[in-house]
Amino acid sequence: MHKMILTMALAACSVPLLLIAQNGNVVLPQDKGPDKINVSTYPPAQQKAYSLFVSKCSACHTIARPINTTMTQGEWERYVKRMMHKPNSGISDSQGKEIYEFLVYDQVNRKDKNPSAFYKFLSDEEIEKLRAQQQ
Image 1 (cartoon, rainbow, N blue to C red):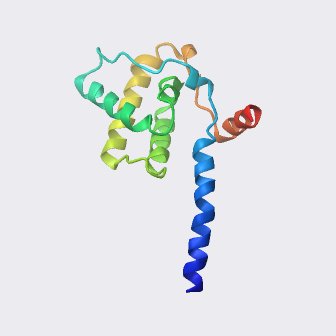
Image 2: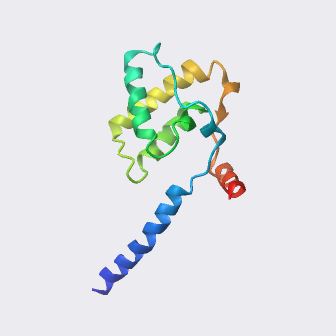
């Protein structure tokens, strides 16, 4: 009985912290950029993946963030896996693969052609510095 009460008390304390973490997002420079990509010249599979990407990724952050960020394939893979494991992401393994493949396609076919027009991926430490400045 005491174990159950302790578990409930810990859960009650954790929920406000989780909500603060989700609502306390920092505004990144990428968030202020364009929030759409014209994918009409992309292959049909990538156009379909773009729709999935927009619907899933905009649930937790601005869609401008990944649209305006440049990463290596390995960074995109880690980023998508990290997002898939966020609470309530609702991104299945197959959807994560499709989103990853879209992001890599977009990186190679749009961003790599003009890298100075995009922002480099920020580390957690760099994001924390921005968060501290914005508070």
